[in-house]
Image (cartoon, rainbow, N blue to C red; front, side, top):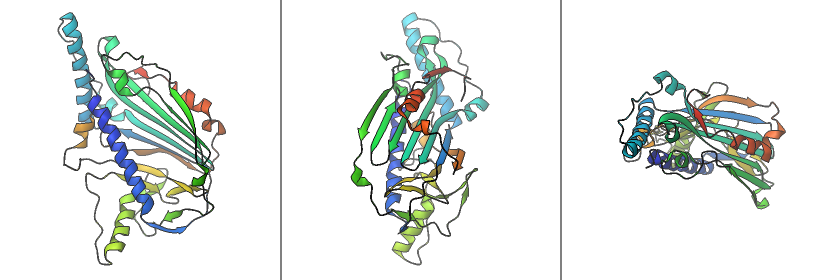
Length: 314
């Protein structure tokens, strides 16, 4: 029995939706080309859970574990003690650090959940998945990943929680680098969002104005619906351009609240509600440590503990 199989599966589908929308925005709202601006940039985003869905997910995991144990030992289930609401509201379930430094780019992603620890009397514990990418543009890419959460919390899993991470390197085609700079997004006159350490512009506002211009000069822009995720691009530079390639500079994510069929996302995702993220830290200009763009840094990140007791950090 795998108590969080549905949340983990649905979460990957939502991430695919995000990737698809970013690809769409690559094609719309483009104007003139812009030269490379390779000043170092660091973006750190964090996401929190929907409280009710999170509590239901933890309870389902613990009760499922207890049922499994009690069937083996024929004992009554122990009392369930959930973490305080205040702690769950502060708990960071998603964390993304992106580093842009000229030819180099890195992304360090952390996913956390709280679920039953089968080896500790079904008491709730924090399970952590990490994956990372380090890339030298148009040259090579390193990718690494630790064990998926679903493979750690399954009651019948044969894998150790501390299974060594996998890391591999691949060669990138140099043809993707071009002499001509890429087109940029026209954000002139669009409303600006205060993200905290910087300001940003929502992608749906860019797409709505583009669609309005293409349809009719008199067409009215439409608001994003509850089934559409949205991304807030750095207002000074929506994309980080280097030798004809570009990467989105996303400071905030507003996740979809419902599926296209109208079902609340929180009910599907359980512990991760709507994959929304807020800006936690930002810098534009200060130098970034070169050591962050190495295989050693990636492996050190991935080798961090995959399971922690409640209260041990975020």
